[in-house]
Image 1 (cartoon, one colour):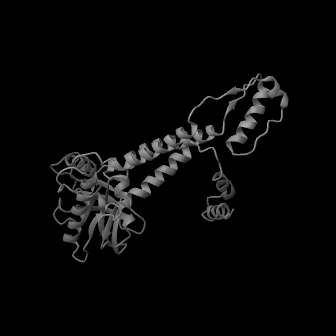
Image 2: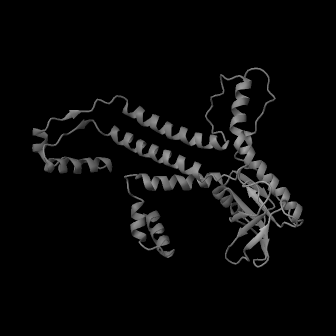
Image 3: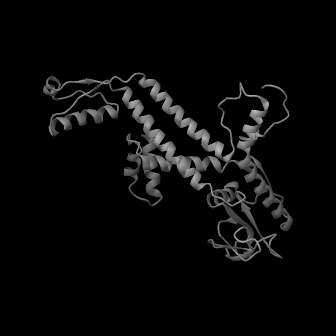
Length: 311
């Protein structure tokens, strides 16, 4: 109960009201799709903003990674009114020969900041703003996150249903609405994990009980859980990160290297653009020395093509 009380008081303290109602919803066993999708959107976004580690940043790493990952880019500059360096989302404008690919100005606005337009280095003479790009085409990862959040939420609902089915051995048909309400009440208690006797014994005497001949219900639940895990692995694979599911035992070196190179393509592109942005920052702001690398969680994913023979 401590968890629910803490969440309730915190929610009220934040001025959102209905703290008890919110805390009570945390005990909802129905696992609805909407809240599950919201959960996985936050879960996956939390994972990806920790992919890169920085040295020398004048603010926390998340300040730059959140807008870069979410919008595809962010502007890095020194704001005179704020009196410090900032990394912010904003707009790109200004004519260059490279239509829709390269811009000369960054437009931004934020509390306590001067805001306005800044010329982008190195595409404008005297530019004092650096654009950190997420990918070559400044793509956001939000569509990818949401797509997999939907798949993972559906997988969670399927896992819940598979686990509930383990508790079912029979189906009781109903002849009318009254009997249906009695069966539904029993069904709801089974779903919530309660011991659920049927109060109307005449129902059992009249209605033919139909046995459920579902073989391997426990295995279906395990397979569904593995499906959810495979979806999560595929999410990281699309970014270029490998999860630990060993399938290399029977692969030869060229196949392993080709697979790793395919996975590393996206992450290498993302790292390359951050490294170039850090270099540009260091060139126009001599008091900074910023560098970026893959997080230690993912350094082991570096591609090694030096092996000979079978693995």
